[in-house]
Length: 397
Image (tube, rainbow, N blue to C red; front, top):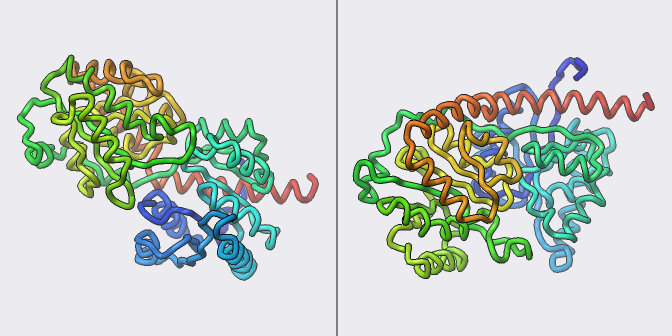
């Protein structure tokens, strides 16, 4: 990449996320620490907005989320407000995350041509919908730079015809997880004796109204439950955990999963814990962490598991191979295959020394790849390189 001087920039960061969103918070605050001026745009007042403000970040609330056909006046008003904000703020960079934010910013950015237009994708579930895929592709040429949060996403957008594509991971505070933390608190809470194998799936329990995810949810909870009898057949003493919930609390989907566990005869062995704020303690108490997702980026839950030096098993989809290198830092299995998932889990449960070696190497790699200081520094370089490149193209060089 050419040397550009790296001057401080005025950056507008736009996300449709309101709950959770640590990845967004860490990126925005990291850019501010580098000396950039950052304004965050969120679709509603929510805990994420409060955390950003507490970190010294200015936040603008623009209610751009909604169904255009049902909420046309409000969505149109939000679009106009965003366009006006862009003209007034005069950003060097307009950086959006997720489809709704991307579509709004792609159109609103027409009101201020000098800005570099960037979309970074935390996930691409929307590409499973023909309509949403078409909308994304139709407006894609408005982006100067598309950043995939894993190699697979970057490759998808390169194939779709994006003008410029790069890989940029979402980082986190990797130093906050200490693999020497004892797991006794979590294990005692559930009455696990020393030596009892514990396997966990850590993910939001979420439903998506797309045909592709009607039989199996995007996070693959059904696959984990279907694998449970097979795991217990090989390791009868094991205990399994479903950790997480809907962002809005208990849902029909969670009850459907609990009904499935009862029908499979494993309800006594599968514990639905709900949301846990003590994720380090939870991970410390587990032996193996699984991610049977049907669609996924680099998966923060598995990054955290490897930082805690745990054995991990993941679907071989999306960005999971960026996080888990098969046979080196964990095991990858075909998506939607409970038999393969169960076999990989029992393989790791049977070999603690191998789990430890994999976990130790996984921690070393995650410390380098997903440290928020490194990911924000990469983003900073991408901004300056893309601004240089877009200005060169506009000059016809």
